[in-house]
Image (cartoon, rainbow, N blue to C red; front, side):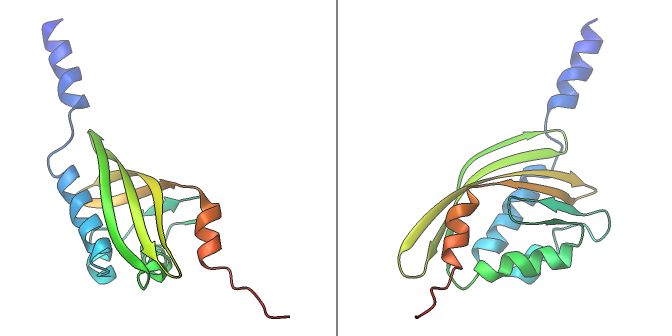
Length: 138
């Protein structure tokens, strides 16, 4: 019985390197170095999902998120939870166009063989859509 509890505890602990990979990826995003961010994503078997997109191509994912690079001011990590090969991070994306905006988001990630294999992102997409809406002159 005691050995069974030990195995359970061991399985619930985060795998070595999971948080380090997460922080390295977030640092690359904050630095607007999307080529470096891409290096932390799996080349095969990658998948992502968010309120505004989903897919299985890491290059397309990076191209999509790099659109915010020009207005990204900072990425502020609020909380990290890790268990096994999964990590969950709560962040604030601080952007600036006509005014400064703070967009809270949560990323749930799966790390396989030292690479991010899956990212599920949760955020209020309404404020994101407003940043890229262009008003037409009448």
